[in-house]
Length: 73
Image 1 (spheres, one colour):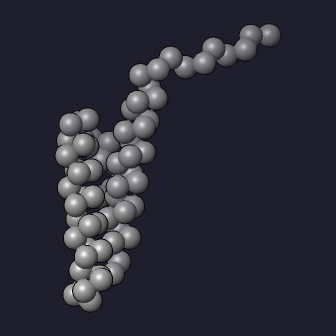
Image 2 (cartoon, one colour):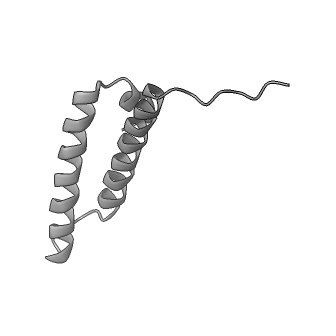
Image 3 (cartoon, rainbow, N blue to C red):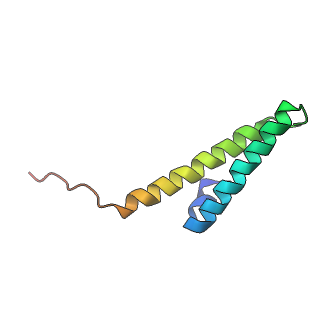
């Protein structure tokens, strides 16, 4: 997924997608152990998607808090 696609999702959709991707990584790792995984780059791609989703979720959580006051001169 591209970051622009992830940013368009709602909070609930992000949580659902995160859960789906975590299950996917587990399945891919299981396939890798049993040597049935055809494309090992899928694990890396899925982990990066998870990181992107977590980044967007953290950004949104941070926007809810007040920004620190700027120092005035």
